[in-house]
Image 1: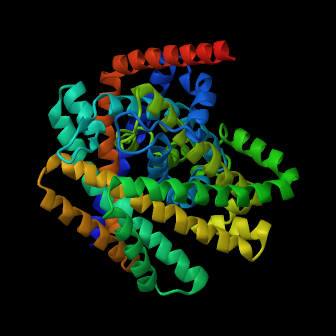
Image 2 (image 1 turned 60 degrees about the vertical axis):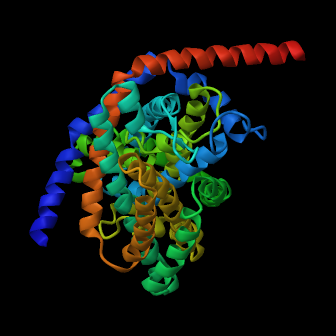
Image 3 (image 1 turned 120 degrees about the vertical axis):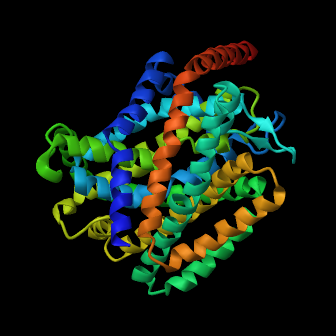
Length: 453
């Protein structure tokens, strides 16, 4: 068993090595340049779309802009926002937070491109529901079905690990440590909750996440804001430490700048999933009149996930100075940092945050895995089997050690990214064309609104 763990660890390290990270960030840089800094000039309009009360209810699709974003956020805002950020700071030093920001900035362009293609090449399945994502734009856009099949295989498998078992395992562990609740009880509760939502299908998932996600995000953001406001004198020193160590490797493994870059970029990608090809599966279900409109909404996912939520975790940890304590890592480091500023309530806030984040990830990834499986197997009976197996895995993950599953899923996640990035680069011309269409449309709408006034 130990030998197998070592083999999987080596494979994971190879796949998530510099080559893949450069490809992911490089794709984001390329799209940023080609689209003319779209994530900057169109962000205000994108945020307006997200929070607009007048969601598109007439266009083709299954769920609203906001529900599609909430489903994607549910899947991405998970243990990575608490555990992943802490790990990045421990292994890469405070400077890892800076490189996380950099990867997120370019990742916004990547996420936008994924969503454009997802809506552009989506299809209506036998049940009359929308189906889309990398497997469809690789098949119908790039004309390389074999790449779509490869992506779907990796996605359907990865969902059981990084989107399921490892999440329930994290929840059960922190609930046991904070509230002294046995893992099997947590496992049963999580399984019943996940089962009730998952068996309801995409419309139920969309409805639940549209209420669930804003609440959990605001809960954590408010807690972080309280820490910042009550310790405002520590913010500037923390930010300057983050920027200075980004180029010096201060407190990083081996003191090397490469560690700050590697772990900052890697954990940023794990958190917001830009380039992995998962989120566009949810974007494809949105009711929208143009691919670019939903893509702008999807772009804000990276902004919210990494530039806001991950930043709260990272800055709080650096403010506390506890990242130098080598006995602390993962959720323990984040918990200790929150406890330093908020006292006994700090660990409870982190625990509740992790419960919300991980539970929502299970829901979101159930949809991703299901759509990948559905692409491979059209038989409805098999789809029910997949759903049941996914729900059972929630309980298994909460009650057993998952080191092997975590590493295996890590590998599947990395392998998902490769065909997806090939599709993004190969279809970048389509993305640019749809971008020109939406930019023109937005300008026309603004002109009409001004004329009406």
